[in-house]
Length: 320
Image 1 (tube, rainbow, N blue to C red):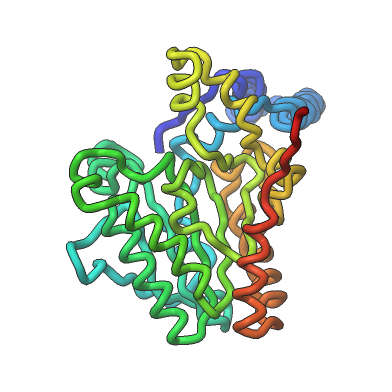
Image 2: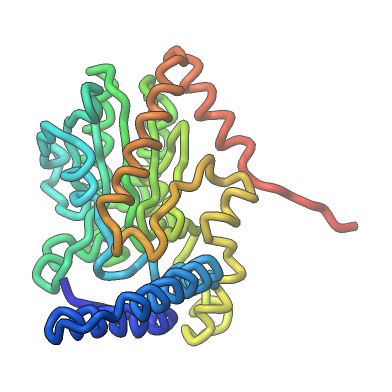
């Protein structure tokens, strides 16, 4: 992976470089610099906490988009076993921007579905930069109905700036595909847990996000539109993206306060891309706990809980 350092991460990276420099100096010249390394390490940990615990909304968006951040297939490989990927919507074709299939989490059989980005230009072209076409959402719904018939819980991983808005997508009715998913997911009789891993943008995220539980990774975001899109509409200038990010209330902590999501999945200090295995264990533990809780509910109660959850999202005030 390419070593990408975001602007606000530079103080952390500089201290890490100094620690490595001292360690190399000690190893190559047989010099004892243990005390100096201990002082720098302590300062490094303090700096990490200061930086990553006080991020602005725009900085969180940047972290959610970090090119080294784990994607759906990374988590599938780390958390699940016996993954059997399924392809195609049985109507038009295959969409590599959405992946899914049967798997196991320990001994629990599940259906896992998620949006998938690429690591380089070639992969991103193949995955359409994580922006699904209509056939991607139709494939996702096909797999959900297969899971429903097989009586296994559904896990959806969301990491997309939004559905693909191009001509080909419109010609194949992207709006209708998402709308059908929203409608039919309310009729699924098995537990659905939707988790935002990085970006959760617009209807493209909601198209696989109607769940009994909505979880968001600590440094992910979930919003009706990307900050750039909001800035372009409201201020006619994408330079206002940081202001738009603040206004959209899209961070995990704000979403929890507003009652939009059910739970924040913690990430290691520095983000999931710096400590992937640890982040995956946090996520696995959370998934297992929620599956256990939801499995206690009957099919009818699962449907009713899902319906009531979305009926009660939102706060309104009237001005006279």
